[in-house]
Amino acid sequence: MKENYSESKLCILIACRIVNAIHLRGEEDTYATFRNIFQELQGHENHGYVARNLASAARREDKECLFLAAIENFSEYQDDFGLFSTMCNRGSFLCVSARQSQALPLLLESANGMRQFGQIHLHIVYNNIGMCYITLNNASEASKYLSLTKKVVKTNMSLLTAQTNLACALVFMEQTTRA
Image (cartoon, rainbow, N blue to C red; front, side, top):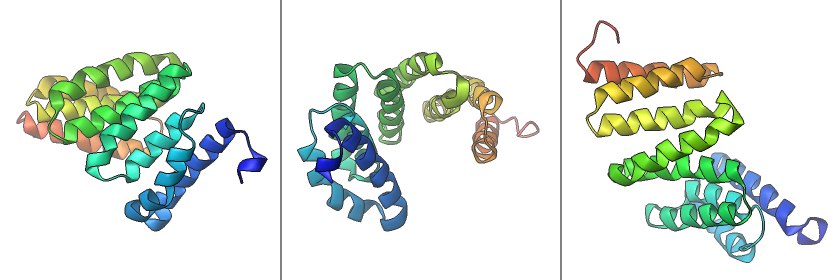
């Protein structure tokens, strides 16, 4: 396969295959299959996408290294979309790992950076910020960001997620009539 593509294009292809494999074969099998390929392609443009997607399949203890490798690659090759979207993924991971003080600034920076790409991706970042605020017991900020999520979301499935999370925040604030 390598002889047919540049390393940069191969990284994009592998990143897509990782996502498909996660859904078809599960995280553990995907991680075992692709971790060696990840090593082989290190240092090439777009390797960050391989690292970020592999982080989705990785064991908890390996996720942080993969997210940091992705961020480093995106910074090196000045790929703002990859950088800020990975910061969002890493922030979400840090939040669910009870590291909210590290997660929140990362998520807020991700939101600022993703604005340059329009609102299409902001619902994901706003949702993660809102959920992080919930875990910090800051229901008013959670409600603000989850309302923003609902406002900018473009798909029905994401709208359902946004409405559910906003309802959760409202219940948390004891505003059950609005939930």
